[in-house]
Amino acid sequence: MQRSLLSVLFVVTAVWSVAMTSAQTSAQDAAVRDVPKLIVDVDVNDEVYQRPQPLTENDIRTLVAQLKEHGCETLLVRCGFLGLLPYHTELSYPVHFDVDHARENFAPFLGALDEYLAHGTNWCNRYAETLRNLNPPEVFIRACHAQGMKVLVWLDIFDDGYPGFRSKFLDEHPHCQWVGRDGKTYFKGLMDYSWPEARSFRVAQAKELLELGADGVHCSTSSHCRHLPNTHETDYYGYSQPIVDAFQAKYGVDIRTAADFDRAAWHDLKGEAMVQLYRELAALCHDRGKELWIGLQIGRYTQFPVDPHFSTNVVARFTNHWKDLVDARIADAFVIGDYEIMSQPGHAYWTAKPEVARLNGEDLFSWAAREYQPYCAGKTQLFLFSEWLSDIETNTRFFAEMTCKYGFDGVDVHEAANFEFPPGNMALLKAMSERLRADTRGSGPRHHQ
Image (cartoon, rainbow, N blue to C red; front, top):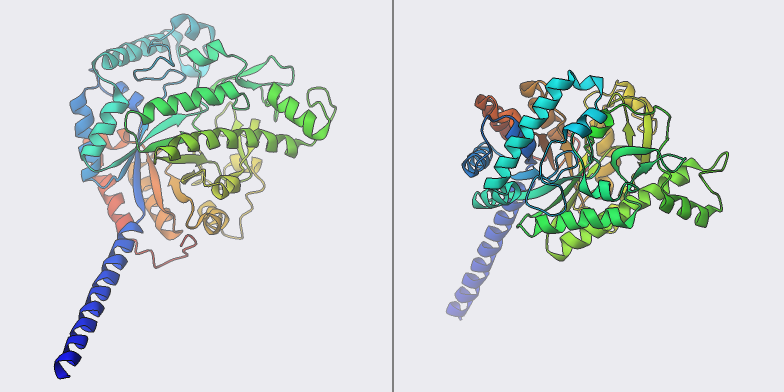
């Protein structure tokens, strides 16, 4: 009887011990998982530009190892070059600087014409030599995996034209650019995904990059073509035939000829075209067990102000149907404030987004936490975009603080070259990593549980 009782006690004690150990391990694992992520994006174009010699495999392996050593967990590798695709692909022209195109489309803000032509030619020649020796995304993916890091390919979905740089797809499908009410004045380089062929092109690009072994796809709203001279008329673009037809079918109005029409409904239809693009990319990624990250401007709209880049000259916009992207499990992550200036709430740029209404004394990061975190909890991760690190020490400290203070899941740091040149800046990345890891996820306003 006593032996039997002792046996029972032994078993109960053992089970309790295992359960406690398991609970402690789970708690520790959860704590590790809950540390804000340090993500670094790598602009391969700058990696080529910053070096006097072509980029090598050893350069890439060294860079990835340094980023890992200094706290980076995930890399976003840029796979666009102002309309060219700078890797081994038949979807693009070979990397080449088109001098005639540069002359025809030159703008004074680019500086002296001769210097611009020489710079572009030298850059592309060095790039072409790099591509003869290696396939950059393939090498980055292999190097990241060797370090135990996640790596996503970074697609510029609105950055397909610049003086001297030409998109093969847009040369063959010029109608797949945002167009004015006249049906013939194009926002050059700004891809319009209301056209199924434009979506098919982007999906084809994502597919061949995923086949190199990437862990997912990140869609960025970066758009260098916004720097070029343009009309300043509000909502000038957005009259593609698919949108015209969709509005006619739904509301019985021809937006190209009507004196007035429901602008919000028009923006919504353009936003639905973007949801369809993301839906197709998500199907591609998720069928392969990969992730889809989406750069998300804050507020109701993704907008494209022009000339200058952060002006109130909003010539094109579409509705951010971000809740649909969450509900349909399309977006695995949002990069919040993508290519915006959330650190400058007083900038005139924000007057073009009156729906971003902050409480008294509230900053834009707090607004974004209130807006997105409760809805995205447990469904879609939320990462901040670090902006351009003009003062790298101050900026890295600031974005680590904002990430932790408002409970975001991590921060996308733009970009690796800031820490390579000079190499002493890698210590600043390490310091940023340590600030993020010091966050206990238990203090401060935590919306995203």
